[in-house]
Length: 308
Image (cartoon, rainbow, N blue to C red; front, side):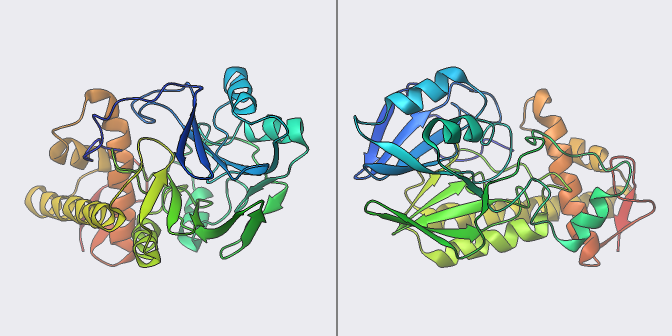
């Protein structure tokens, strides 16, 4: 993840406060700021009366209290929806659902939605990955691609958008889309195999672009007011990284993902280098699948890659 977007300097909302972003939409910021989450996780409340909550967030009694306090007298939660099962999005889903007798909905468990390549890699030794996964997460109800949910004055349509994680969903709400961690205005997403899949990430960018949303509400950071421009910037950014990887291999010969990351990432803090190495590995796996790069041992941090 790299803080390369135009909104990275935006003022932080107050954690725990219910901010009304649009008619029928409230946001409550979770108290979990970090280099990977910016100000924290955005939990969204959709509708009035019987509402849906998107991404309840991390395990936090204070945030659970804040979500309950954000509801008006007589309101209740009818659906708890998780865009993907990372620990900053999913753990509070079960406590919130129990509090209101609502189901937890998601595309599937943490290992669902993977491509055949990532399924095979998940079974291999030495690949690593699994950063931040909410172990044991399983929804009460699956929300497959294209499924619709409705409540008091609202309808959401599920868009399966694997890439950041295999079970990642975006949710279309009229001309708006809740984009989870797939598209954010302040940073690019971590793509770490086998949970992350660079080829699918790029395909999902194209799908979101084709949806024609007027605004995106991401899992972290402020709303993205020009989705087409931001998606194009993210697509160009990934293509630039791919070109840098290929140029490094052409100029320096066989190299590991870590060596390549250190050669091309000059602008990030040292603490973010591990994430950069995982992004490079994701690119290398995708390039191998496309025949652009070869490797001399099973994919992973110690494998050496060379031009195809």
